[in-house]
Length: 129
Image (cartoon, rainbow, N blue to C red; front, side, top):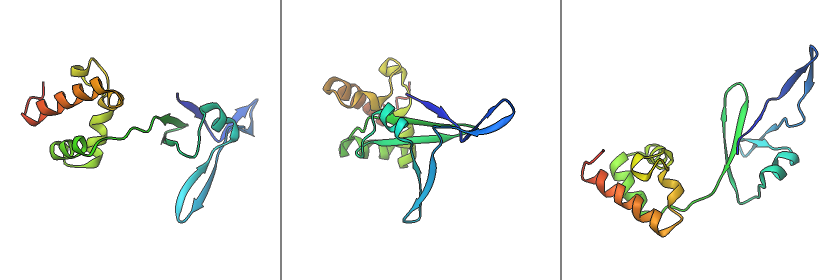
């Protein structure tokens, strides 16, 4: 689910505040976004959730399921891709071998985890097809 909202909207030539606008707060030197209750409720957010956002002309916010990656899978991927960012990118990129699914989406099920491990083993052997 992606929500789009910008800080201000134009209505008949005048600028008015968007009811979905967020406020930026600084907590312990970290910039944080305070989301309006309407968005929190709509997305079903709780304090245990992790949300991400990107930026462009509008802000896009999405909630993603928090998936634990076993240390053995992470170590193997770190050995192949060298950086945490590259591991993250690979886990979230759709793979032809996985019928167009991202590896991260399969790690919650035993069969899915087997498929991901199979793909990782192929990569370790140098098979990038």
